[in-house]
Length: 188
Image 1 (cartoon, one colour):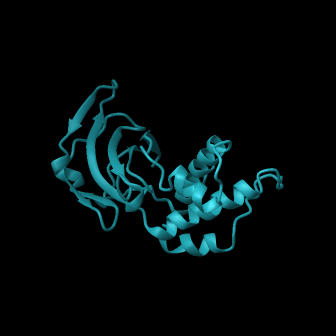
Image 2 (cartoon, rainbow, N blue to C red; image 1 turned 180 degrees about the vertical axis):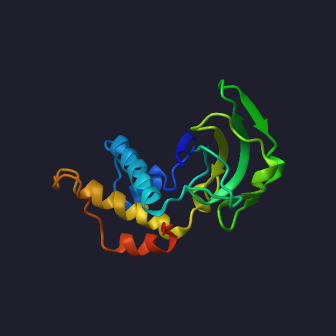
Image 3 (cartoon, helix red, strand yellow; image 1 turned 60 degrees about the vertical axis):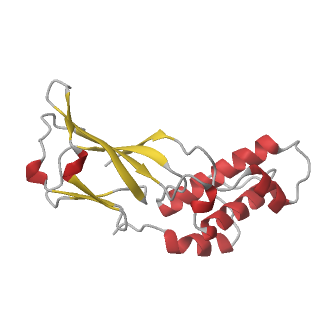
């Protein structure tokens, strides 16, 4: 099930001022670099945990309704189901009432009765679900261990920005995996 980012987070989980204080940088010469490192560190943590840290909108695309009546939403945590649509064979959309779904926030899932929903008429990508995911709208809504992991990653990348690694290698402080491990969503 592909997930497409519709609206990126409005803020980062760690502000530029907070990162500069952590780095002990008192000048503004590297503000653009540090801001880019913060965004990169957030993306890294989100990728490793399969979680959206700050509220963001996503579109989930399915071919058919799962017979189990359950869709596990990634990235987690799921906050709201904003819209649901099915497509007919000619590409026209039919809006599906979101009241027919139970938003299970704790499990980051949508629960529904598959037999009560209209079926798509096209074979692929016949269903679109627009959801909002993330811990909240503010940096302080993000769990502190994930914010600390971002600060440590930014520090490592800032202090070693001239060092080149073999293709695909990412050097991180040893504490980063320990900080993000409890938040990882593992696929079985």
